[in-house]
Amino acid sequence: MQIILYSTIYLFLALNLNDEVASKPGKMSNKALDFLVSKWKLLYTWFDINEDGKVDFSDGDLQRSRFSNLNHLSDAEKKTILNQFGKWWTECVLFGKSELTESDFIEGMSNKWETDKKVFRKMMYTCNNMIGNIVDTNNDGSITKEEFEVILKTGGHNNSPLDEKFFEDYHPIDDKVPISVMTDSWVTLLTLEDSTKPDLVKSAIEFGV
Ligand SMILES: [Ca+2]
Ligand SMILES: [Ca+2]
Image (tube, rainbow, N blue to C red; front, side):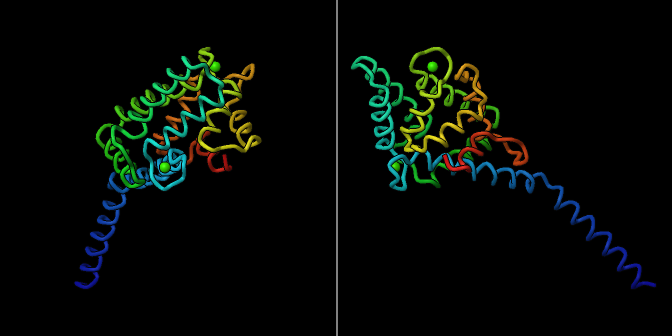
């Protein structure tokens, strides 16, 4: 009788303990954070434009010179674009550092995310909107297929059919997608914790853009 009683108490405690461990918010958020980290790592590979395993301003230089060449900019336009790109690289890619390894980048993103998700989302919105406005060379508030393909090519993404599919996934109207729609899609990539929800940019990277 006593053995049965002790067994019952033990079983009761064990079940409750398991419930408590399973319901700890930390466990859930770690899984969500792992998912975000996997997407931030994808972004890091996109920033390492010269593919030397680190991200620094030489990647930014390569990207902005390709951008001004592909757009056939005048000297005055080139100067403006070089400055805008420089600001974006300094503030939004390198976060004020001169060089980032993948672990530096992930650590920086994780710290910002865990400190204040709302501030992080706002920062991702500002940064993606900033690059959207650079890409929009004719300043009409929208990204055309040509503008879209240019920015992809600056990052070495030169597969035209895949670039085109990526653009078509935005369901452009009159061959244009508003900058705000593009911005939202990148903010989704960088902040959406739920892996079951649609993620246009993640899908595009996965289909090989
Ligand atoms: Ca690099
Ligand atoms: Ca435009």
